[in-house]
Image (tube, one colour):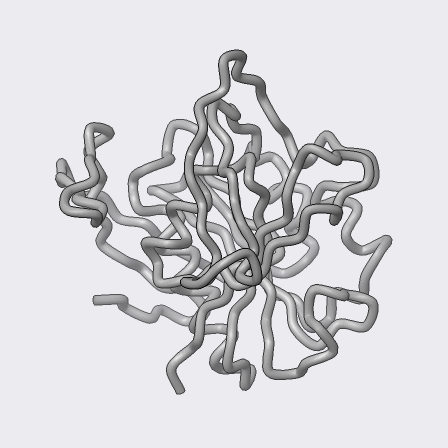
Length: 227
């Protein structure tokens, strides 16, 4: 049960055993020792500190996906292992990274959250709504976008991402949003599985969204927010 403290939320999180498995089509989590994650909303002036949390991950598999129009049953995907894994770092792309956001957008309708364990920052998330020029918002004022979420490598698979996403959803609801949208790529399989477990639905697939990365497919996830 979350405990609100000012602009922070403290959650008791159970650390997930890295040997967690899928059972009967559902993700089965085995729990280890507990830890406390504090999620706080921070001012945008904290972006340099936020940017120090790595977003680098290893791509060792990809999702082969089909559009809803390709057949009945909506978006479908299957995981394909890569013979040669590689590393991807969103912050290393030209013009990307937290320190570049203010050069592209007005951040007045954005929120920045950080997750801490004891005094150590272990993750962060950024959410936006009603922002001119942010095409992912589809011109809607009842839609929020999870712009960024990142967790330190040694804190992954320990509930940090879930705590951050839950706080983002709460913020979006407080700002009148009915849906949360999340952009990923077919190269980020672990993120896709995470959003799926959190109740998000894959509703859009775009094969030509990244001209500079033609092999990647844009995946758009949506989650309806309770009112």
